[in-house]
Image 1 (tube, helix red, strand yellow):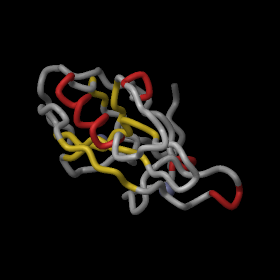
Image 2 (cartoon, rainbow, N blue to C red):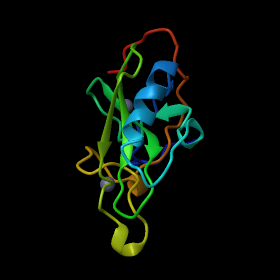
Image 3 (cartoon, rainbow, N blue to C red):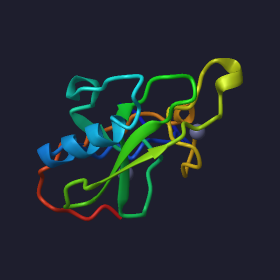
Length: 134
Ligand SMILES: [Zn+2]
Ligand SMILES: [Zn+2]
């Protein structure tokens, strides 16, 4: 697939949600008493959807909270390690006025989701041989 000049890509790193993280996510989600969340609501695979970055920390949405003001639970992980941190971050407000909301979190680095494409090569899901991508 030819790469268009100037095309921008998401990071695209993938990792399976470890079993240990399921309880953490559902525990956080349980703080919302209106909606009951189960593991079926969670993503089984995290995909880092922010723009290609140099920093070592990847961000993957793990659970979309329901409700008009709700944000999203994001799991953070580093290359070569399992995700261990989960934080709730409001959704990026960009694009709402044209009904094409950005699917990133508020304050995310890089371009908005509609400015980015999937990477030309799909990254392997963790675990994989440790490599450096600089
Ligand atoms: Zn990333
Ligand atoms: Zn955005």
